[in-house]
Amino acid sequence: MTRPITLFTGQWADLPLEEVARLASSWGYDGLELACWGDHLDPWRWDEPGYAEGRLEILDRYGLKVWAISNHLKGQAVCDDPIDQRHRDILSDRVWGDGEPEGVRQRAAEEMKNTGRLAAKLGVKTVVGFTGSSIWKYIAMFPPASQSAIDAGYEDFASRWNPILDVFDEVGVRFAHEVHPSEIAYDYWTTTLALEAIGHREAFGLNWDPSHMVWQDIDPVSFLWDFRDRIYHVDCKDTKQRMTNGRNGRLGSHLAWGQARRGWDFVSTGHGDVPWESAFRMLNEIGYSGPISIEWEDAGMDRLIGAPEALDYVRKLAFDSPEAGFDAAFSARQESKA
Image 1 (cartoon, rainbow, N blue to C red):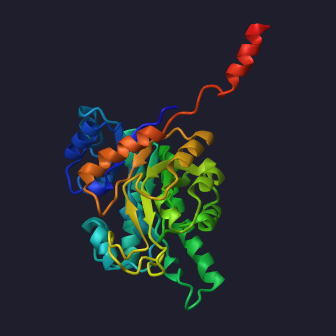
Image 2 (image 1 turned 180 degrees about the vertical axis):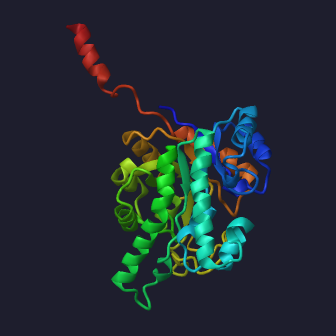
Image 3 (image 1 turned 90 degrees about the horizontal axis):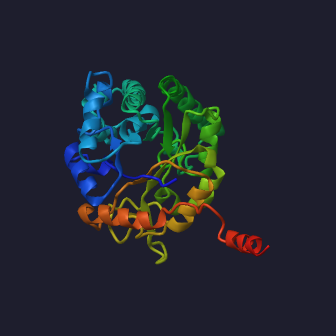
């Protein structure tokens, strides 16, 4: 069941795909989790003759494969409220258009449908991404939001994502939602609510990224077990907490990444507080056989150092389950004596 280890290209989209492929191959990665921004993938070209084949040819040139593609940026805009300058900074001109919020949401939804179609053209079964949320703005709970407002947020999510998932079903692709603050599912119980809202349909599952769980005091290993039938993809990113001095806060204090005054920070895999060995053992127990994708983020380390180091770290821990129990030899010894 040896799982391939891939590099998520979202943090590398400033480089041409061919350069990222060259680097990843030289470090020993098995493949790439391709992001739908930069020049890496363009979902609007899904039906262009030769486009998908050309992307695969680049990977093949460097001995790499693709098991999942990702479109976090456009997925975020499907449900978000408000739509504002933050979205203008991450969306393409085609999706942003004139910036009218509902138009942005509709165009973002169309791109997500095209992302599923492009995945199928690439021979990929999983699209990773965000959903956005019309109710994340209520997270502070004051002024208090009514239960009906929260319920409406989940209804909005279902009404906007069901048509996208219909296309995914048509082409045989699944969506792996990354449980993440600012999304419709950002912790344990909101994940449960999101699955209920979508009717537990098979097209909608989860991308497990523990870096967003540890600073919320959610056990990422128990999360794997409880949602074991919905773990469609795995991202490896780490988080280091610094909340013991009585000053640093859990909500980040509007401080930029990498500042020591932050209560927590993303760090290269293996440098933080994620219990990786327990997590990989649990992945074995639940039978997860998909890719392990390293999402490299660390404001205090050069990525050309961090990405190959993270790969070495994960390879040492992402071991397969044994073919037999460690005590099987005891029974074998007794049988041989008989």
